[in-house]
Image (cartoon, rainbow, N blue to C red; front, side, top):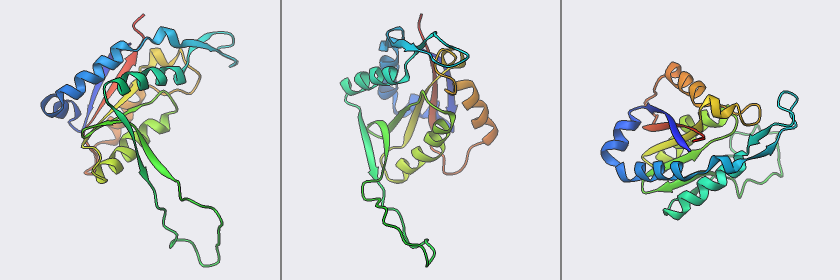
Length: 191
């Protein structure tokens, strides 16, 4: 794969270049080693793409996982203890939340990475909520979000979001005082 687009959210690129150049180099190394063409194995059953071979997000994720794991990156979970004091007095529940957690795909040092080949809401959640939570829990200081560019996303199932859409929304949302520096990397097939 190749990096086809780079967007620096809240000074992400500057922070990576000055404080985390080795981690950034490892991210670029993994991206360049992912053989996206080996993941073009999903036969579409969708009405508009019926019979077409599409990229499989789960296979892409597996290649990213293998690459990052080889370099010592690990997933990281934060266990959640949900409050119950906000239930109204006449509500009772038998549901349990004992094993609830939030998970970041890869963490090394104080860098967190999310690889997202899914729905749009997950991209926004990763950067605008999850990375902030992991920062508040002293797990990460900066983040990287790896997402497909539009041309690559069109060769996946319908509904996969893409870099250009995500950047537009982040630019129009603006930066909040709770946002951490994040580098958004738009990836494409190197075919």
